[in-house]
Length: 271
Image (cartoon, one colour):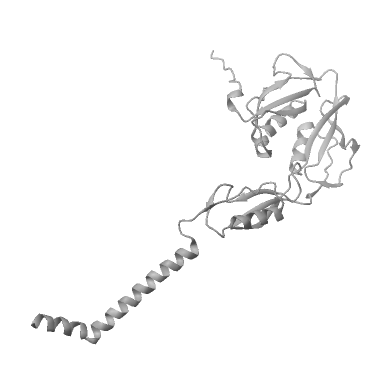
């Protein structure tokens, strides 16, 4: 009887009673907050990021809204072979798991190409001219050889078969042809072994050997622009040789793939 009286008096104590009420209120607030946060953040519920590549900004915005997220353009590049204004890159990447409402950052292909100044390449060597074009964001397209006393000396610079004057403003990544001298006493070149090299490195090596690229032939493993940049040479026509020469300016066809098993293993000699 005395125990019941003590228990009753314990709970009837105003301090204890207020503490119990406070604990209950705090517990209710914590539970309510957890429920609210779970509803707001969609805890445990993730959605897959769509692939926005090659879409216009309007198409990407619509696709994003349908997927429960939003997009924002934060940067641009200029890729000549790609549609102007199309999505070039995104972050997070396609297929990434994100929560609803996530912002996807887009890099688009610029609508207008960056303008650069055409340099004066006349009088430079082929290597010097190549380096100057690269520094200006221009592309070496073709080597045209004409008889002259100095081999690989730049005589003229052309764009679209027309001479282009130094100082002319042109689009970045414009293709420039070089007219070079060719002495009949010094007109031989050798096809380099570029198997295993990626697209741009292989093209660069061909030009370094005073040869032209006839074309790039990609196999079925190359699906898009990024693949083409990463594709590697598995065959050339003519075949590489350090003993059989060709005339400078000869054309070389490059065959490229993403499949590394198609790339021949280069032979090594152990003396």
